[in-house]
Image 1 (tube, one colour):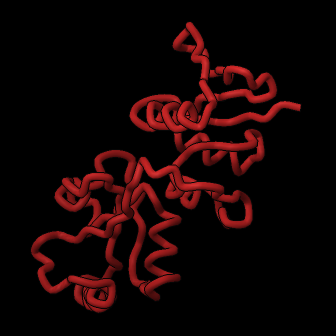
Image 2 (tube, helix red, strand yellow):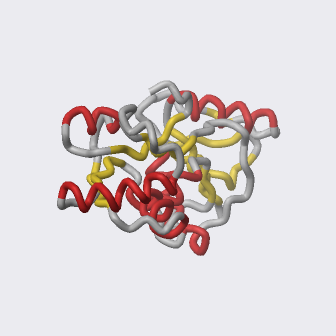
Length: 185
């Protein structure tokens, strides 16, 4: 019986994952054809490597179609409802760190905490006759953070398919929730 390990298919996450595996004694033999998304590990005939995008890895773990995967915890929590019941996070590898951030326009100077935001959300609805619009690609994480963790209910999630940070300037949202690894945007 073989075990399928899903790894990130490109970029820095792929490079860092391969380096961690090699340091642990698992040398991944990459295919000659860059369009081949399967690989093997030297000396491990029962270990199959499958290269997928980080979000696909989370989804496939949830489906049970891969046995192990290296992906972001944020993607697992966003992609899978009740993720803690469906997958186990066995190790944090120490790379690919990202933060989920709530960002409001600079003119909202008095908003420095989630409690402040709760007050603004209620006032906003009373003044404008609508809920605050939050642009995000991470609706599940946003909903958990606002509603379950902070008890904020007066908002509406607007799905972002592109540059989330531009949504308030474009008028499609009042604020954003996004992932940042540098904090620079």
